[in-house]
Image (cartoon, rainbow, N blue to C red):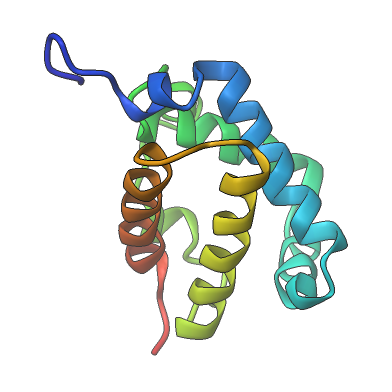
Length: 132
């Protein structure tokens, strides 16, 4: 919950519209950028990119201080548990963050919001890491 008078990251990035731009940019990068191929293949082994787009939007909405769509549907938002079936080591974490940093720029998220958002996403990516 965001304290009174403070703006959540969800609000700062433009609520649903801004979050949609971010998630769309991220998965477009995953699907199209040659350097993201390993991440693309990892997503294709699961439920696929279309599913991941929905799940990431729902998760990030609540994670950034907006509606708790993911928790409403799944009952929790524990990143390590959500990604338990996915091998995430330091290289995959860093690739995810690199793609997300590009997506932040493509989505038009500017400073200081971009840096604050990346700080939160970096912590989340480390929590999701389940391999050394």
